[in-house]
Structures are given as C-alpha cells and as structure tokens.
Length: 163
Image (cartoon, rainbow, N blue to C red):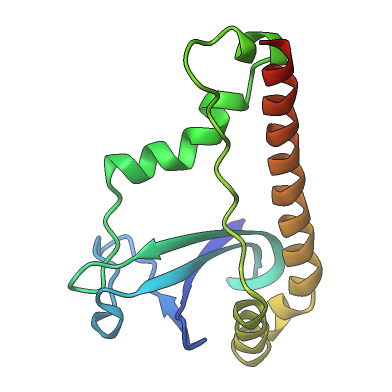
C-alpha cells in the first residue's frame, strides 16, 4: 500500500505537515495566510500501517489565501499542464508549423538549498525511516526535472531553426 504526505516549507524554513483526511475537505494553517510556500508531496510505501520507504517526491510553489488554504484556480491548473500540452507529444517540425511566436517552456519548481535542508531535518526528526532515502530521491527528482526542461528548450531551439 502507498501513502502521501503533504508538507509546506515557509521562507523562514519552518516545515508544516498538512493533515490528510477523508472527513475534512479543508487543509489549511491560519499562521500561513497569504504566504508563498514550497509544497512538498512525499509518496511512500506503507507497511504495518506505518511509512516504510520513500518512493517519490514532488515540489510546487504556491501562495495561500487569507485563511492559509490553497485553492487551485483554472490558471494554476493550466500552468501545471503547460509544458506537457505544448511540448509533450510534438516533434520540432510540428512545433515549427504552429502560428505565432514560439511558446517557451515553464521552468520546473525546484527547492532551494535551505528548503532541502529544512525538509531533511524535518524527516530525520519526525519520520526517520523516510529520511534514509530522501537526499538521493530529492536529487534524482531535481535532475529529472532539469533534464526534461532542457529537452523542452532543445525542442524549441530546433523548431525555431526550421521556421
């Protein structure tokens, strides 16, 4: 079985665990109202009803509303799919045939060094079993995001040469 844990890391490097409940639809922390935070999603295996191994990590930078809650807008949904929709399944030739100026890929959301350190410290103290693999998995995820971004940039460069 797999589980997900959502964390917010503030600009002051405080880490907040966001409750995941089927009964409560609102996930908010009033102390974080109107702040931009790094959202970290941890995907892990569960054994004997406890986290046992980190599988994957995802990052997003979000701004919380006046209640400290995150509301996904249509703009944010389209931003999340922007790169895939524009570059995911096209060749340089197809991209070159599109009308108008070239569309540029959006840069991936990556944690800053101090945010990674805050995440590592939090996991070491709170969920030590997940901490063991965290640095490796975080660095692999960052490398993967950077590589995919480079591929999209190269695709745009190739398509502009064909115009």
